[in-house]
Amino acid sequence: MKKYLLVSLISISNFVYAQTILEDQFHFNFLALNPAFAGARETFSMNAMLGNQFNGTLKPQQIYQLFSTDGAIQQGNGGLALQAYNSNITGFNNSGVKVAYAYRKKFGDLFSVGLGADAGFIYQPTILAGLGVKQMYPYAGLGGLINAERFYLSLSKPVLFISDEGLFNSKKPFYTMFGVSLGDYDGTMLNVSTLLETNKSTGSNFSVNAKAWFGLKFGLGVSFRSQEINGARTNKIIPMAEVQLSDAIRLGASYDAKPPTYRTANSQSNYQQNGILQIYFRYEGRGDERSTNRLKYY
Image 1 (tube, rainbow, N blue to C red):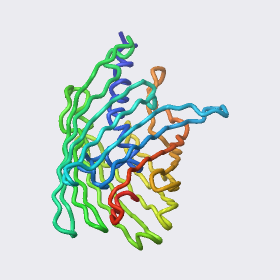
Image 2: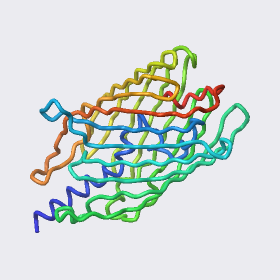
Image 3: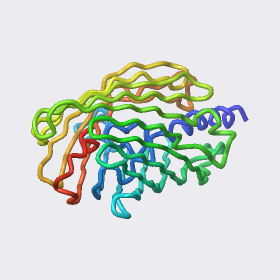
Image 4: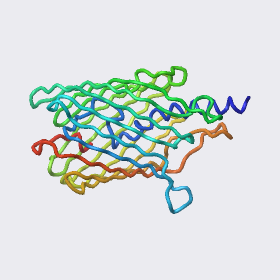
């Protein structure tokens, strides 16, 4: 009985983190934080992200796969998005899918205001994880976005409702994100953003992100994050790089030396994983060639 109780508690803590596996990779995918970003870049795009760990062998172990796609509809007044993931990052296999729709109102060339909604499900072990039982947990959320040429303000709660309050009542984050873009669009451009994550019963998390682009061909960035997971606060820096191989194809990579900790069934202490190398691929369809939308380069 004690064994199953311990597994249950471990499952709950990992369950809460699995809810935000998409959100933790936001530096390549703002859609994970706010459904109002659907179609905000004014093009059709597909993104794939692969997380790899080196665990004592030359060949990396792939521990998660993420996919997202979105595009503008209704002559740019709306957007649709789809996201999916599969992950073993917390010691349990879990997966999920969510869709999003955004409506956007443009105020001339000054700025636009978007409202978005998402809905999806998480599929992973229940409290009976020790027996290998899995269950589907639907959820839904909302978000808003104000976007101008050189700044944006994003407010969102991507998990506003979820079907099992008992497991998720401690992890329904509210995200406030603000970004500013400096420099020349076709020359040297510096994009800086901050993110504040507030939760009902845990400490606030925040990050500061900066990315410099050179001639829209090569980008170098860094993300400083302060996160509280399983009662322990971790400060870390995630470096990243991107290269635009063509008008449609972009490759990128980032390295997280301190991925989230989790607890194993044999110990009540936190287990620190090895670093995660994330490989990123984006395909972007042709949009308005006159557009100088800077959201594509944060």
